Amino acid sequence: MLIFSILLYSVSAKLQFFVERQFKDVNYSIANFGHIPYGRTLGGFLVIPKELEDNQLDLCNKSNIKKLPIMESYWIIGRVGNCSATTKAYVAQELGAKLLIIVSNKENLSNTMELNNDGMGFKVHIPTIEIGKQDGDYFMKKFINVEEIFPYGVITFKDSKKVEKPEVILFITLNDKGGFKFIREFQQYYKQLQKDVKFYISYEVDVSKRDQRLNFTESNDQCMGGGRYCMQMRGEGLGRQVIEEQLRQHCIWINNATQWFEYMDYFDKNCFQIQHYGVCSNENWIAKQKSIGECVDNSYDKDSKKARELQENKIMDQWVGNKSLSGIIYFPGVLVNGQPYHGNLEAVSVTEDICSNMLNESICFAQQQQDDDTPSNGSEINWALIAFAVVSCILFGLFLFLCYRRRLKMQMQQELGQQVNEMVSQYIKFYETKSEK
Image (cartoon, rainbow, N blue to C red; front, side, top):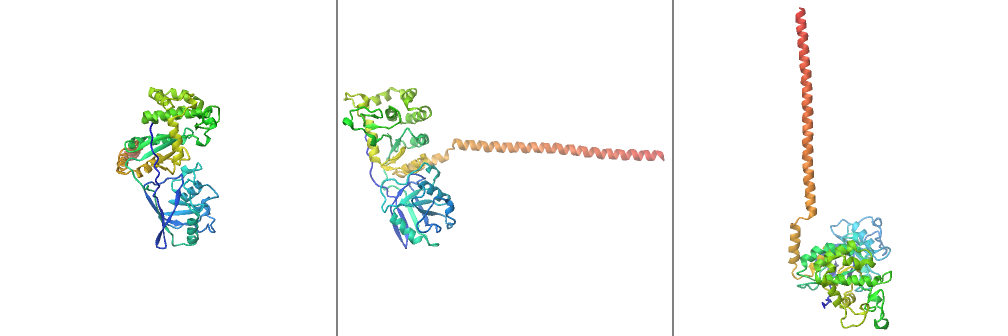
């Protein structure tokens, strides 16, 4: 049984403002949307829009803010409420801000993620953070009417402990199409980093719905293990079928992670109805392998005489443990060295987070350089279009030139003919006049 530990060290990311000739440290939490520049440091002037006074800072509409100072890099601060955090972040982004700070209603921030994605976070490309009410009130009262002096802030997104081989857990759910898109896009980065990063996967399981009646000895059509591992779905037995499919997929990963990526692409494109998961899976050669079936069988308690749906399962036990210890609330998700990944779930951004945890970052830099030097299919298509356009222009220009040359020749011939006719007419007229004399 594969056992790994979840590292529990904190992020050393700092938020500091240079105020009154000294740095002021501010605690903050990161929203789970937008692009978080992991491994980097951002700087900017904190701007509190003058139009929104009396602590009624409403960033729900761009038209509420008429004018902002002209600066190369500035951050905007606003209060929580009146609209979603993603809406405020998008408005700040449209106003040109490089970062949004939202002031919480709470004096102290908790470790839980409070600024959540409402489904529109994909439009946001700047980081959003939340600070406590006490810190927020301090800046608002001190700088809301100031027009020339702005506190300068510096924020870092770096981990306190870099390791030689980071541990990364991909938390998978079968109920999110965006997760399958992420898997397809992340496959290339997995191939690049698999030798230098410890990758694991963990599937969704509903811990809150664990059924402990009769000490997990009663069958439940939404659960396995007598109620230990549950997925609440609408429809009799559907939860159990989802869990069984997740177990097959996990065994594919254990057997061959590369084949897992291939199978997940197949599953996303072909297996749509839960009641057909088993049939659909058996139609794919990867899931048909004998080693997959053996892995599934061996994951159950061998010494148990109970029916399979009542037996404990060591792989599913990992799912339960990972969800309880990781702090991952929303699936799909990513855990990098014990810290939940924040921001839009994008393959490039997750890779940046992983690289920022690596002791030897040159591995990522070398791979990035290789990617930059290797033309993509999109680049080849663009060059082909450019070449086609250039050749077309040349041919069209040549065609116009030939047409113009032909027309010019015809005009010259016509003018020459007219001149000859005139000369002949004059000669005949002269000859006739001479004959009369």
